[in-house]
Length: 280
Image (cartoon, rainbow, N blue to C red):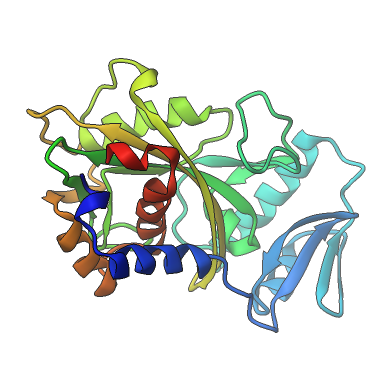
């Protein structure tokens, strides 16, 4: 019902969001490699900062190469984490969360908890280094064709005060996508998922763009969830300041007004592109 309430121009606008989701990096950005393995993308100002605290880094033209491919996962992770801690102490890495993300060189589309990591570091380092991260986004649809959305806390380090999906959160190191979904549903919306089969896999979408803290490159793993009629979300972790059950027209008006995070808007677009579109 949610999709059927949208006009053709509105559906086209969501489709355009997907087309524009992966932006071209600014020309002065620097590719970050570990030996032959590409890791991420550094803002031009980040490259010399990183080289000053991370041994065995060489800046050559538009490429920063870290000579650490012969190290173990634990050794690479420890060295890079120590460098990020130094940069944090200098005030160059913001929004430190004391949470670790995994970086994978394989299974980038849909990682599982058992996939081998190339390294794991503090999540704030992912944007600073331009590494590909993963997140789960859940669209909570009601039977009358509306969608539950959360207003991010004004104290959030990223995208404060913008509208988001009913649940959205980064994939922690060692966590499966389903485990992340269950955890975030409780932490952000106070919803205990009775069984994971209720989650309808809506696929994934990648978003890449420059931000104030560096290059944001993330794979969004999107799920649709039919919400009970008597459900009203209650935030548990202080990261959401309000909730609203919005119609399709209200969602599109807020997306047009840039009141949704780009990631949340893309997750809504992806949900309508999925095979479950007929049920929404």
